[in-house]
Structure formats: C-alpha cells, structure tokens
Image 1 (cartoon, rainbow, N blue to C red):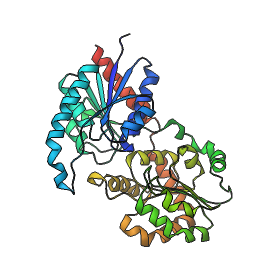
Image 2: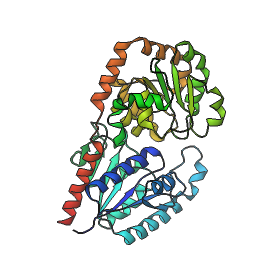
Image 3: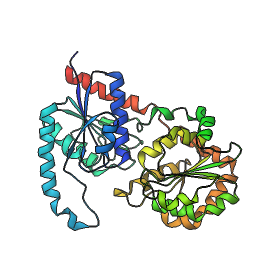
Image 4: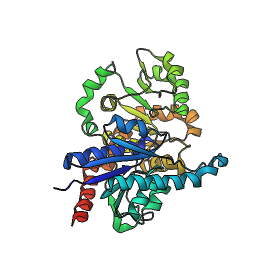
Length: 366
C-alpha cells in the first residue's frame, strides 16, 4: 500500500495544538504507516509540545496581527512573504496528499500554499466563532470539522462536518476514576471538591479571585485543587494547606476531573469540549484578551443551554460568592447543568474527524 503523507499545521495556543495532536494520534491508529509532519510558528509553544509527543515539526516565521501595539505590524508583510516561501519549501520536501489545519498563525501560509500545489486541505475549527485563518482557508478546503451547530453562516454548508472537538481518550470515563482521583490529590471523600483551572500558564484574574475568597471556601467546608499556572505558582504556593492544594500544572487531568464536584475554568474551545464530556457543574470566566472574543462567545453557547454559569472578569469579583453559594445549595441546578453538558458532549469527535480525513485520502488515491 502506498504511504500517505500528512502535514498538520496549527498552534499558538494549546487549544490549537492538542486537537492537532489528538487527530495525528488517531490517524496513526487507523493508518500505522502514515507519515505525519507538523508545521508551527517559530517561538510558539507547539515547537516544544509537538516534539514531546513524538512528532517532527518545522517552524515558519509568522505571527498574528497585533491589535493594540500597531507598530509591531510593520514587519508583518515581510514575515508573511517569508512564511509563504518556507511553506513552499516544506511542501516540496514532503508533498503531502492531505493537509490538516487546526487554526493559528502557521496554518494560514502552510495550507494556502499546499492547496495551490494540489494537496487536499481539511480544517478543524474549535470555536463557536471561527478565527480569521480558518475563514480565509475555508474556500479551498475540502472539508471543515466544527464543534458547534449552525456554522453555515461562516463556512460553506456542503463542506461542514459537525463532529465536536478532539479530546483525550482518558477523559471518556472519568467517573470510574473517582476514588483514584481523590487519593491522587490527597482529598477527603466526604467533602465537596472545587477545582480551579487557569490554563498551563495561569490566569491572573482567576487567581486573584480565588485568593480573595480563600476564607469563604473554608467557611463553606470546601476543599480546593487550584491549578494556578507556572507563571503564578511562587506567588500563591504559600496558600497551600490540607484543604487547599496548589499546583502550577496538572498532567493527570483525568484524575483531577474525576475528583471535582464543581469546576471553575476559562472558556477555551478545547477546555469546553473536555468539560462537556466530564459533565461537572461549571462556572466559566472567559479571558477577555483572546482574539475576536472567542472565549466569551464559547461560554455564551453553554450558558444559553443551561450547561454553565458565565461570569465576566469584570463582574466576577463582586458576584462570584453569591453565584457559587447558590450553585452549591441547589442540587437541582447541579443536576440540570450536568445533564445539559452531557447532551452537548461529542465523545467520538476524534474518530469521526479522522474518518472524514480518511475519506479524502481515499478519494485522492483514486
């Protein structure tokens, strides 16, 4: 059988990188002989995370348009030209049949060049409101995987596959890990556990919110697992106690989700897909610093379906205590939220996405 060559491009944030890795891993399951190479943006986190996952990655010199410090855009046209040339060199080296874009700076030049050179392109859009890169690439794409319904206003209807976002296989049955999770984080099974997530780097606003209300958590007899991020760990590690577990980063997310009774999180697309599968009562505090306000729009979708409580950063400091207490006091709201999240979950997303990609591979070979 002829070997299939793939280029996977996307990055800048974990929300673009981890779906790309999940897709690549599933391709390897269905096609062990596949050759998969990644393309990312130089200096971004994919240049570290992808090799750690066992894949080759090439970096191109590209970055996003600055919306605040406009002077930093002076070199953008030159960077774009260089990135197109670099993308062409990479394409000529590997000549992939299929190119997969998961969003982010690097996927734009790479998939644009690949499409011109004859590769079939497939997009994976994580958000309820698409990024500019995927919007521009959609016209030439052969297929577009989306995580939310009603995306026809952004993409051609005949190209859309409503699949959900790829998630880690280990999250598909977290309830079976409840005892293991409680033991792993040294938690009391007779107390409610609040899990706070701010991403791998951390979220200053969420950390400040938690620090301000530590006494309240203790008064409510909650135990807390607080993932504060590596940028803030030294600042908050002194809060550690028997009931407050402080972590810069958590690798064992399946155990953490299993131990949780209530979760506070940002609203990145990949996180929301995982949280829907985990289906625990949820308070979302979106980052206001994300391009095109993606996180707020993602969180709004969950709020409208009764699957989460949405708090903006600006209102969280004043309303958070009453919101949390009301949620803890209402078993009915907790159960309703859990049920709504389960209805939104799409646990077979990765397999479904790769199925559509494999259909493109087969049509290319014909």
